[in-house]
Length: 92
Image (cartoon, rainbow, N blue to C red; front, side, top):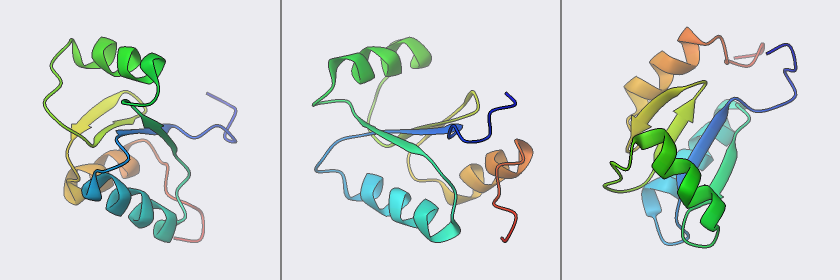
């Protein structure tokens, strides 16, 4: 994990999910890089999510932060995981 250029955060989302868009905007505001994958438009992203969640998909967003799977836009849990994995930007 020495390559810090690769985002360690993946948001599994859909195009119509307001919470998905809000989470992405929040991370943008914090200056934290991420990858956003639309599970309806990208079958590989859907399969990746199913694999990570053990097939227990109940809604989006689902966020993978360096292996921590967080369901929904749960700011306290997201921040806790971001801090735990030292993913905060230096200027934060």
